[in-house]
Image (cartoon, rainbow, N blue to C red; front, side, top):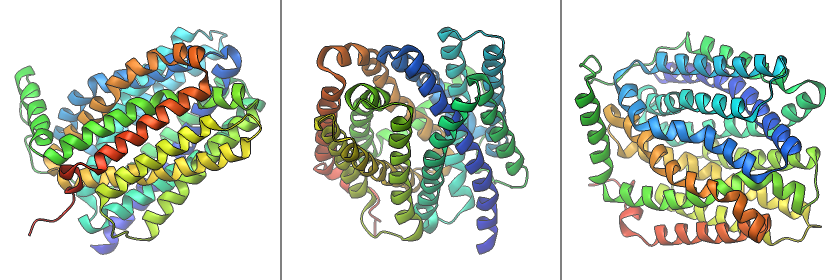
Length: 407
């Protein structure tokens, strides 16, 4: 039994690793293409909105079905759908149609697939591994994402230099196919529940309310969701502006953009490595809030640097990657421990929607804010806001009690 769950994760991790590297390469190639072709904060912001809004809107409904459906098949179908959307984009580019509208539509459809894949993956983990290993598994997942974030941009920058954007997109399709094949070798049990119940509109809304009450009945989770939503609201516009900060403020190009993306991945790898190889005894709630503060600090200081201090910007980006990695792993693990397995898909999907939908309004004002006060000042202002969200969350007694075992 001890070796059984490890073998399952080995298959899953190999497939996800290849898929993530290819997706990271393609995503970065698209960012380079949009940044160089258009050089507009609005274009990057609208691309980010297209890639998040559909998933955020359908997320809670997706969670209902994830808790009813076979989670392995859900992941496979979601990967296949994303690959199909990428293929449509690639064919369109091949025939010379490089319209922004098409890119936005395809990014939106890809996000629909992600709305099913990620919550299904996160909800499947507790069904395979023992609870004592959840944080370590989350750390390994972060390591995989981190290595992908390091290798992906380098591969993406190389690919966009050697091939057209349409051909670069084919990498993502190959990665998705490998991820699907790896899942064929794994059995993932599903929790006991009402997956065969009729999925009427009333039943779906009732199931949504069950997931919503799961959050509301846990005051610590409710407050943690609130502060994390504020942090995400401030983080998303900054994340979109990273390429423009490199290009406009630090005077960089493709190489410098790649360096910053790789630096972020290195930071995530370091953070995931600590959690993957060790089992920290620090409260997960404390780690979540401390890393929010560190992430905000790294962003605020990045905006404060002069144009000649690119090397310090790179170091601060590594720090931000470490903070983001530990935050993500700790947050996911805390939810897996606090939420019942039979409603976990709904809660993960609902959190994504609660956190992301408000950020859409922030992204809509990204271009305006960057033009008004400057990209670097946006980093300073929003970085400080993220620090405050982390501090207030640290001071909230209900949040800090999360993860504490009741005796």
